[in-house]
Image 1 (tube, helix red, strand yellow):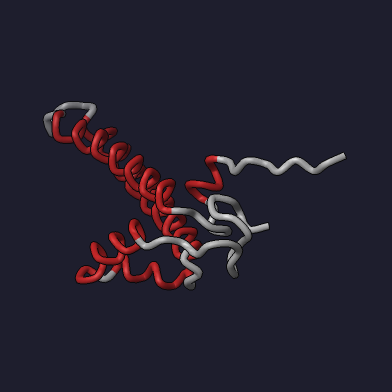
Image 2: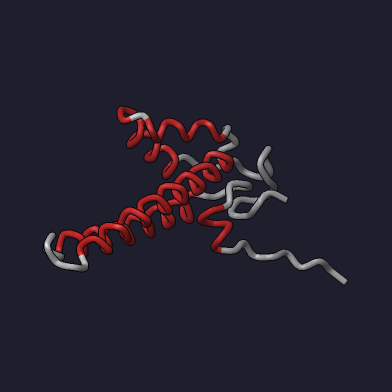
Length: 127
């Protein structure tokens, strides 16, 4: 009986840190969180401060901001793994002068061809 290779799950895509992630899923993951945060922030801006739903919407936005930050870091860790670079390189995202440049590099720099230190194939958890 042949062992069937499992497809990666969304939980691994957004919150796993092992394995590799190519450019397109990385960009789509960041775009997803940008849309979710934009929608919740738009709702916060649309509700008057004295309305009873203002505080819950602010709390929703803050919770989503925390979750999206963690997820974006996990996406970026897998992305630098695909480039065969160490995970601490994502600390560049926290340096204001480097953050936009680092994100740009993560989005356009190609991954390594074939197996590398972090897995056989991109877009898969490390086997």
